[in-house]
Length: 152
Image (cartoon, rainbow, N blue to C red; front, top):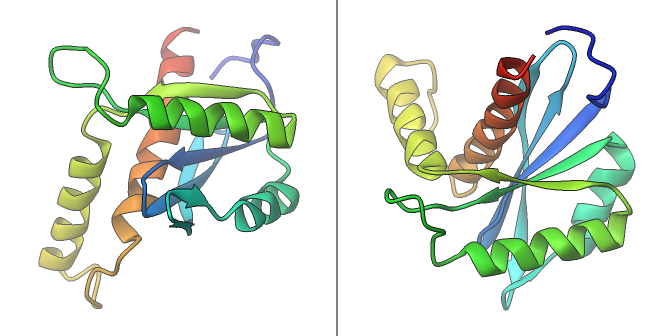
């Protein structure tokens, strides 16, 4: 990645929003890396803001990324309004810039990746609730990083 000054430098936090769980991943802009981090519970469709605030305080990201679901035809998915609402609240609470990232098929890709890890023996334990959410969040961060790298 070139040293373009228009890109922020530092840590990213990516979120795969869901009504029951929110997957969280961390990323670094330079060098471009991403890793699954945590799963945050939602109670009655309300995120555990204390847990999210704690992650933000701990990681001190320069940018927050929220996945925005799209259908195969390019239109926004049924969860898009809730994702947008979450992104708005996240930005308001944190004071950090939030970007929406196309997360088309991230959950399916994450599930396929976990199945492959189990099949190949790289993952010995059973897949737990939240594993898919964290991997999907990592894919959201990787998508953002790839889009920024390809624009250089």
